[in-house]
Image 1: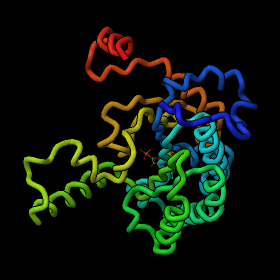
Image 2: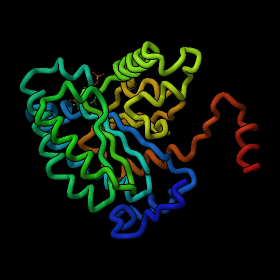
Image 3: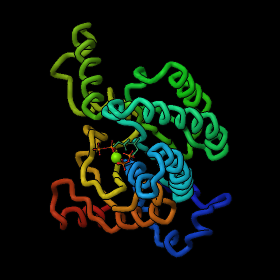
Image 4: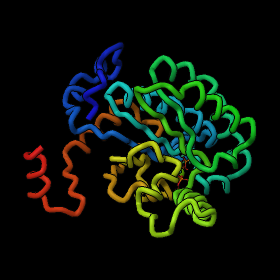
Length: 270
Ligand code: IPE
Ligand code: IPE
Ligand code: MG
């Protein structure tokens, strides 16, 4: 895994700032796809008597650090949960502010993504977002579409169950049109209709802020994902904390229903 990618090539801020942690990373045990539930912005702001919106604005710094760190360590897919299907229920002013932050982020960061070889994708019910944002997202996807170092998926108006429903509806239409027979439907067929169809399932899901739930995130894709919960709020989750999560993942044995002996045997055999 990742053998084709020189993670330490150009200026590697992560290696420079955290050489001890960075060098403990085993490229062979690196998660290919990391997904993050970026939670705790409201509590970070509340603890300082700031408006919640300030917490969201500040959270963008953590996004920048984690995107750079993922790229510098050689993670190939990073999926960030930025706005859930349920988040539409929040106060209108907060939703509006989040859309504003999103707009600024995309406008500013496409250039950085080009420099770093990052392909951008928006996943979720993008059609529910304001039209100008939809256009901006499609522009960013087009601009960065050929980049190959890392894929950054931003989950927006995203719900795991909604994603499954969208996939099932499109499949039902294909059956009705006679393009596929019901008995041909298997996991691969359904996976190919998910928003994440061109990415492997996440190896690691991180959630910040101490909540021990997945809140409708990557429902179909996460059946065998390793989970990492930390009480650190998103504002304080930066390169060091991301490296710590990777190192924790590295120690785990993924068994997929088999015995530990079987898994070890397989490793020896390969
Ligand atoms: C996560 O932070 C960001 C979004 C859901 C958009 P929250 O806004 O949920 O922060 P808390 O959970 O209220 O602290
Ligand atoms: C999950 O956080 C969604 C995002 C991080 C975008 P929430 O704060 O909305 O989740 P709940 O409501 O606490 O489960
Ligand atoms: Mg929250």
